[in-house]
Image 1 (cartoon, rainbow, N blue to C red):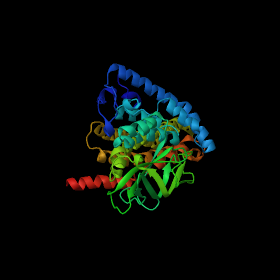
Image 2 (cartoon, one colour):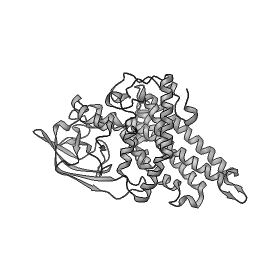
Image 3 (tube, rainbow, N blue to C red):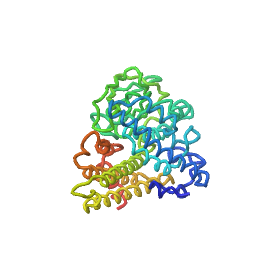
Length: 412
């Protein structure tokens, strides 16, 4: 059974068998593209659409009114199983192949930005946690995270450095503990996280040498969490500024070996997350286009609907083509990742194109709405604000261009 024609996602028959593959390179599970799997997946897709168009819209209205993310949001997403779609069945996840999960993520991207971010992060961060975890850490950290019983957030960006080998937060080992000093900021879910996956470096090291991945509990001595000002979009999601002052963390909270920190950050999480961001851009752009088309059909000026005007038709054609190009590019990257082929450059290309595409589509959609679309009573106004965040997630456009150019120049 094909569902691609209905939702623009991949055909279930084209999803490679993910059974038996482990670790960060794909989801585990018995999904093999057979008829029973196709029927179950189609039902899941329908369920997600109904949630996005119903309960999620109500949550979004509440968030925009209050500026806060209710605890009930996390509980409902967890109870529905939406936070463990991509995780292996051996960990309590639903074991969906990556491309099948991304088709669902397109739908989730049509929700309020804060809800979309929760689904995206929780379905991807398990890869970093699992990448170099011991069996004991999988039981203590990874499985509770997948189950939604433990909230963990990715903690890399610093106020005085970039998000790579120039990190300055340091750790020194004292017996069975590491002592952390430094700062992190723009850390999402800082108000609700039980633990922070912190990337730092051993004192006296440079570059990738000596980098560490440490799981820091929010009540760790020496950790101060300062709320940051509300963001332009994705309202309700709290970002935080973390200050470590002789913060003590058990050595048993280290993931992987000393010197493996950035490998865990990038290899375990970054490529699939960039592809996921690209998919969310396609989903949100699709929602913007739907709203623009609906408005163009209903809005009458000078005796006829906007949809009858050639300029509007040209814009709709451009928007639809942009969206489909983005979809095919992220699917190309997703298949590479799913099949264990190099995916860093395809992921960067997908992220670069789709974030720019989203800006073009939302801008035209707002223009089609005219002045009324600029008011907060309009969904397209919220989408326009939320869409700007994707350009920062998992590296700016300039970072993606550097990744692509380095590989191209190396080959040349």
